[in-house]
Amino acid sequence: MVSRVIPVDPFDLVIFGGTGDLARRKILPALFRRFLAGQIPEGSKIIGAARSELDDDAYRQLVAEALAEFHDGEMDQKCLTDFLRGLSYEQVDAVGEAGWDALAGHMRPDMVRAFYFSVGPSLFGALAERLQLHGMVDPDTRIVVEKPFGRDLETARALNQSLAVHFDESQIYRIDHYLGKETVQNLMAIRFGNMLFEPLWNSQYIDHIQITVAETVGVQGRGDYYDRSGATRDMVQNHLMQLLCLIAMEPPAKFDPDAVRDEKLKVIRALDPVEPQDIVRGQYLLAGDRAGYLEDVENSASTTESFVAMKLHVSNWRWAATPFYLRTGKRLKARASEIAVVFKETPHSIFDEDAGRHRNTLSIRLQPNEGIDLDVTIKEPGPGGMRLIDVPLDMTFSEALGPDSEAAADAYERLIMDVIRGNQTLFMRGDEVEAAWAWTDPIIQGWTERGDQPLAYDTGSSGPDDALALMHRDGRRWREIRE
Ligand code: NAD
Image 1 (tube, helix red, strand yellow):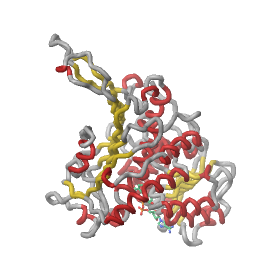
Image 2 (image 1 turned 120 degrees about the vertical axis):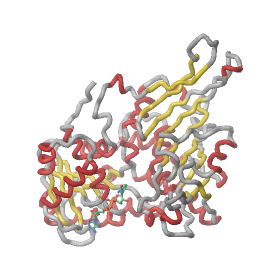
Image 3 (image 1 turned 90 degrees about the vertical axis):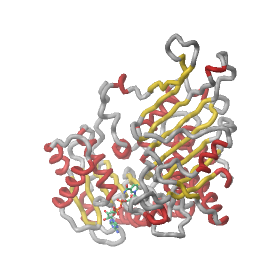
Image 4 (image 1 turned 45 degrees about the vertical axis):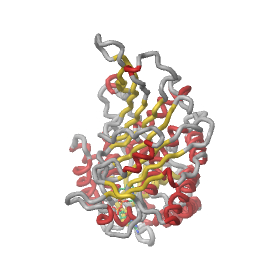
């Protein structure tokens, strides 16, 4: 089955920070792939805007080099030339006056207009203000903002307020690329498009839920930024929290942006504060010639965590007795992100004790190899009697759907097209972000007040032993971290 590519309306898209790492690695390759797929119509304009002094040709050259490095599909020279022709560049200073009139000169009336703020959050307010000042904002104009969206409730509120002066909430697209993943959206389709799962989706049938986002890399030259952030701010407050919301939320009345986001917000607000004994923090140790966390961030006194595991409770009728276990960290044994919904055992086994007790697990793999598996218990084939084994039922449906490049589209491709289409469903609303910080802040403050030190863990491990104990003491175990 070949999925349909429905072209979006022609647009003017300005990428502030258009020469930066994120633009080169993610945003421009995503746009190029949508162009190759025929989703970006002729007449659309992409304008890079940044501090560097470049002309259009030099910018096209920069983008061509970025695509040569980061576009991993085939490179059709004619398409590349056509794509580059639609690019231009303006040298703009977010906090000065240079370049703004020239940028405004690019804008065409009656065109979808979007501004991607691929710059540090300290520039968001200045950009919003200057866009307004230079007459580039109409009621249909959209802005896209990147993480980190604040470092606590206070700063997130201030950012929201600085944007709200110039933009309505319906114009602000706060990106969390985890929400753009095919499988994450499929999770909603599976939950709300089938009769099969929803009746079981509660404490009565689900034993617990695990969410793991494991990386093998360390802080990768971002030590200074990371050390001021840490795993809780960098990953839990946004990505893991969003995944938890999609698993835990009530069915919205409609698949519409505010209906979905209202339900997600209710989940965050229903989260209990986390007790100190339900959280484990860690820092990776040096291994061979690979530096440890403290060396990587060049701060021997750092108490910032590169790993965190926690047990959470969503205090509502649906989840009252089902714990959620979250963990994320760097320099772990494999790069693997997954959500596992672990069902309860059957209330009674009709089989011999030898058959063992089994559980269904629905696992949603986000990376690598996005896909969904449902472990079901069957009879082990053969004449050896009634022995039970668990086998994964592959629910990725790649065979049924056929080889299909659209399904492999990267999260940024999907999300940028949603911005152009004006669909905010997969973007975080301001009140969601603030609620997530309101829940996260006391956790971080608690560590500071108590002077808690992170525990050391080996590079290539599953994190500190205490993180394993967090589940063992409840008679449960983490799933293996593997690619
Ligand atoms: P970067 O330092 O590589 O690029 C920053 C860009 O902003 C450059 O194009 C620079 O010219 C421009 N810029 C800086 N100051 C400016 C000013 N005063 N006026 C106009 N332009 C200015 O940064 P990056 O890695 O591309 O990250 C951009 C934002 O995206 C940051 O907030 C970052 O936290 C976030 N982010 C980055 C990644 C990533 O993978 N790189 C991932 C998620 C979020």
